[in-house]
Image (cartoon, rainbow, N blue to C red; front, top):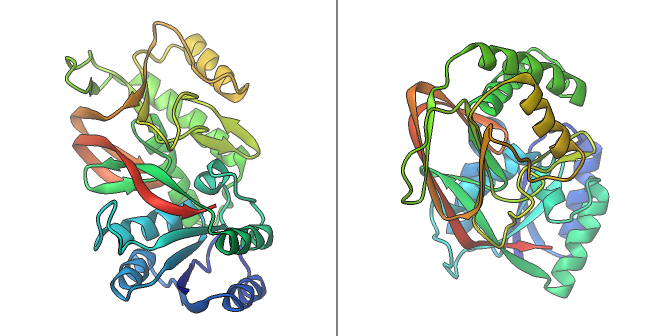
Length: 308
């Protein structure tokens, strides 16, 4: 089996010696090429080249951003269901690793490598549905508003050398919430062919559940959403402190399915449209993609084969 291992050497949980051990283990059972990424977009380039070169397997070793890049690179040259599309393997190496954890993969890179090798020996794979925000694929979540502002600020802090800890994330989320609460709602949401909503403050779109993790704690925003059905949607109509705190508490307690008149929720959504009264930030899989005025979100069933 021909495989390409795409490694992000800057990922939180990776070391040079650890990467060498993992690559040696995989090379014992695969015809393996290793690509260490050097710049943003390099993982997508490596994945695109792997598909063009006829690789059977593309392994992403890094955080969720690396996985997202690899997936987008693969789809630059192949369509869902295309027999030339390689299987995706994931060896988590970041701080959150939401996609891998949602698939039930071990968080530890060594354990995840052993898991991947067993999956390859057993030919154990599954088809997963993915989401798209315009032309950008996402594996587990996307959003406009509060979460996108948090992601942008986290990226700024990390560029200054700050570690992406749950405590830092919580402080930034709180600061961004108060900024959002002082402002006017600027979004409308249209689910399928329904009429657009009144103005909203934030729209969260999930492709699986949990939506993300706060350290070891799963954030369960849409428990009816999985890789086997459509998108989950949660939107804030108001930013009053008590309703928002109640929503957050329910998500962190694992109940999911927050309720109340201050939100809009839907599951198994094939398509939705978000329009902004002024350009706002968009995030997908924890990466900020800049500002958008309109975003079309869609669900693509059985888009990708993953070794599990």
